[in-house]
Length: 170
Length: 125
Image (cartoon, rainbow over all chains, first blue to last red):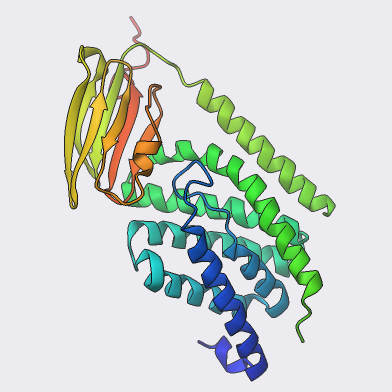
């Protein structure tokens, strides 16, 4: 990884702790699959950490952070390259691209970033599901997913905002 | 919250509203066809008008069989070997355009209206 060369030991340690929290949150969500009434719908608690790292450490390190989280969660819980893993990957990739652009251009507050992330995650998931199942009928899920993404996006964005105010990284 | 945040929020609400509007305005004709897919293969196309009594169909998958109950109104999944049973919890689909997806088993059930595929929209005399 080219960005890892610029990591200081302090940042590496901080990112390691944040990574552990993100992985735990992501796996903990698996225990409440019926909190939301749709397959693939999650609160997206781990996205709180992605937003936090994205704003505090920049795009490169956040990208590295997210890749590591996805890979480790894949190994630990969902299994690598299962349909569920690939759909989550599609959502994570698209939402990360848009969130990092929005953070670099300073378009939104963390709450808006959370909303955008949830929305783009849903779009990415649907696109990947359409590709995997080879059927555009899956698009009929999108309005419902977007509707669910609004409260969950606001929720994770608000939590990220609180986290950013309380924890100052050096 | 900033002004842009509110704009994004309103935009998403608008998208959701649009989606529901389009969804509820899908033409509902009497004839419905259930398309049963496993992976990328279409296994069966069933015209629900021809189903007089509730029928169970079995779809073989990698881990066992997905059992689907169909009648003249719609279809629902009775049992599935997958872990989370989300397809069962999705309940019954009765309107054209609705789908049931079981991702672990790669099973896709889609309801469409009859005459939509292949048939002309209008005939000029």
